[in-house]
Length: 322
Ligand code: SF4
Image (cartoon, rainbow, N blue to C red):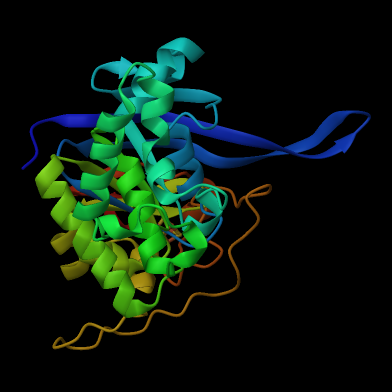
């Protein structure tokens, strides 16, 4: 399946200004705080965490929708953070995003054939209309939308069908990487699994690599080969999916896993967290999780835990493993 890394993220940092005083920001929120991880060619890397933990910001940084303050994003040997706007045009073709709300990302005034063809119009202006239409038709069909519907508008489709149209559009430029940001979160559970199965089939057929971002660990479990768990802008654990579910090491991962049922398996002991997620504008010192961690020690308040390789395929940032 995977042959080397497609993406290497090193020390990736993004701050957003907050408030204003005399035309200057009052402060900054560090949404992404020095992330390090890799995505291997041909795999699905799931990025999971509570709302506001920085996972969507990470996806948008990789796709160039926003600029990093610090760090590197190496895509197939090229640091994307250094690209000029014109260089980005080449790389943007190689990676596409699918968003949570297909209705918002599909223009309501365009027929679906034009929506799917549009990236070709932008990137291949010399391609004939017939060829563009042909490609759009084929991809829509692969994604489960009949060619009889080409002249319909987005509002004439269900939520699941609209997400299939978004997926067809995301494939039209033959990308290598798809960043799916909460791509099935707005769908009913039965439709979710149909769309997830479609993504798995497309990965095989088109040799795709996925960064799959979701707050829902059971959805991430369904589709991922490896999983990164984020908390307040940091990755606290990265592991192969099976390893993570069998033996989660970080207390935060343990608490997330204890809240999802595992059919046919012994129920996990519930790990109840104290309090709410702290504000990213004023994160706790040391381990950012110490204010909620049931196993916190004195050192956790002072020292930032390092990434520890507890196994070949499992990295955890926690003082318990020093
Ligand atoms: Fe809990 Fe300390 Fe580990 Fe942080 S470093 S997860 S506070 S035990």
